[in-house]
Structure formats: structure tokens, C-alpha cells
Image 1 (spheres, helix red, strand yellow):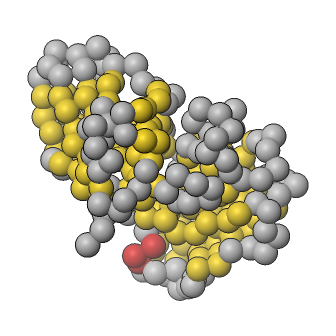
Image 2: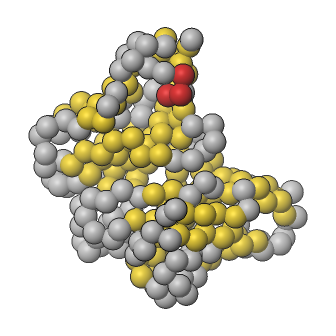
Length: 113
Length: 120
């Protein structure tokens, strides 16, 4: 089955530690995205990538980093510089050209204490 | 920059009745795409319906339809014959048409969502 996988579903970390969230897709999509979702805030774009080895900052990139070494994979690292990392993180992918919708993974709930 | 506003944080509807969720947006572009996504308690985002701005005909998908008013920059979602499984957060989203018109131009801009409850 084609789709997007994110692991793990729940992640717990101590403050000051970096943590990497996984996102894998087998839809052969060029573009991939990371969103953060907080209660009452909707979804906000962290980073996106159009092609392997290239990515761009979204609206709230501070304290996050990404890599895109393979078309299928777009991991997100939440660094210790992120001041409020506890949130729900969603990965998405899409065909790059006009009008195509984004498909979302099941998300990862990160709790930092 | 584009903005998307959903003015109803919460709505409720009786099972089998009809409900309309509102969405307005601000843009200077003439060609763009609008989406409604559903997020049930599982938190999986599911595409409900898509509208292309250059098409005057309102999109429909089974019990879901939109009222797209381009001049008013309004994009409401109508759910007919509401079912218990329709209970979810609903997000309106805007996307620019051209992936190459500038950095981030094909990203989605989301509203803050409307929580829909269905009463048995």
C-alpha cells in the first residue's frame, strides 16, 4: 500500500536533548513537508523540500533542522534550541506541480519534559 | 501573504441534518486552489474536497459540497445527512497555483480549524 509513515507515534524526551522524527513515503512524490500542530493554532509549516538535497525554511523553522538524502525520506530533528518543542508533528508529501493536494502521515506526538 | 480564517471554532449538528462550515481567505492572486481537510480523533489528516479557483462550478464529493464565492473570497463546506463519523476538526487550506512563482509558493496555508460535533 502506498502512503506515508511516521514513527514513532508517541515520543518522549528530556529537555536539552535533540530528537529526530522519521518520515517515509512510497508515493514517489517529489515534495515533502513538515508541519507543527498546536491546540487552536491549526498547522504551521516548519520545513519543506522540493527535491533531494534541497530544502527550504517554512514559517517556524527556528530550532528545527531537516535533511533530504533520499526522495523517500525527510527526517526532522527537533534541537535543544527549540523553546517549546512539545507538539504534534505531521509530515506530508505531494506531487510538485499545480493543484495537487498534500497527503499526510499519521503524525508523531512529541512530549519534552 | 495569504491568510485563511475560520470564524467558527466549534459547531454542532444533529445526525442526518445539514451543517455549513465557513472559511474566508485573503489573497491577491487570481488563480489558486482551496481545500477542506478533515482530522478525526485519530489525528490523521484526510482530504475532503478540492476547489480550483478558475472553475466556477462548485466542487462536490458525495455528501460534501462547497459554496465558492471568488469575489467574496469565501469557501464554505456543506455537509449533508451528517453522520457520527463526520465528527472531527475541519481545516480550510489555501495553495498558490505555481510551484515556481517563489519560495514556498506551493505550501498550504491553513485556517485554525472548526471542531464539528455530531449529536445522535
